[in-house]
Length: 439
Ligand SMILES: [Zn+2]
Image 1 (cartoon, rainbow, N blue to C red):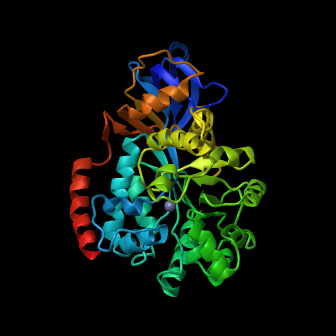
Image 2: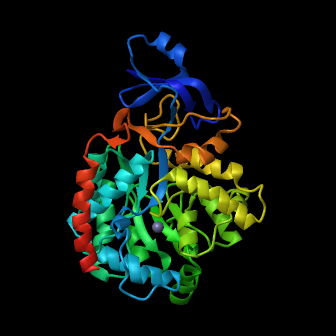
């Protein structure tokens, strides 16, 4: 057993959110007890003690929607004129990029994205992968990278029709193969779909047929831009969500990314099916597709979680923007304070806990010991009532000291413990040059 103690503990556990001088005792990857630092040391005198020296201990954050495959685009010039709408962003950037990815590039992209995420205090990623030139086995390649760096993951391949029937069928088979095999405690598989407007009825039927026996819900972009809705109606005669619903693809383990252009009647359907909408405000604003009114969806009973869509690696950055965007779209400075905190600290842990063998995302007994230590020494009083203010204006901007995955330190003193980040990034730069040439 090991105890991390002698620092402020933010538990994200609603019943016991904050301990001023707290500690977490963990053993075999699982949290045994959370409490006062002195009390736990007395109770478990044989345990190894790690002194936080006043640094903040909190759960590792959870990113419910991202794309590691995009990591090598940083600084890359487009070869077409700048996009003027969302579909052109896909055509001129992401769909050109993902076609360049071979095994070497899949690995390099993953390492960069995973390292950035881990070093920001994130310990679980829901990744949505695309590499049309290298589909079979791509989820195993990704899983290896997650293991090498030390991250928990829920993986899927984004099926679409845009690269022809062979690649489409490879995507469906890759999801099924990956999700039906036992992935242990660290991984889960889902059924990835790009978006309604890039999958025909025939493709959706084939996906629905492939799912039984996998227990894997779908992970799909829905109504991210108005084009998904208009093109789905033009091409297939129905709105995106209805196409999923009619094939039984919604449910507690299906993730609906974005949902910016959903109608109120569709909120009701999501509530009934208990399918979470994953909000990605940075990406939505960056793509100028609009912004989700999270408080209206929450008032309607929809579960709203939080992801980054690959725009940033840090869930704390995304959290900081979530509240600002909520205030902007609601047109009132009172909006978004509690709801944005709730997405990060309550809803994301609840969503992720649906997928893994133990609950996670909170510091509470029986949960996976996925934790982050932040170099934050509060300059103002901190207690259970004002944690949002400290997260937003302090902790989100403070350096990450160490990160634990199932009790093992995968970041120590701001550095990855399993791999050399400088060496990894130097290799990634070489791979990125090749990707940019092929782009
Ligand atoms: Zn996305």
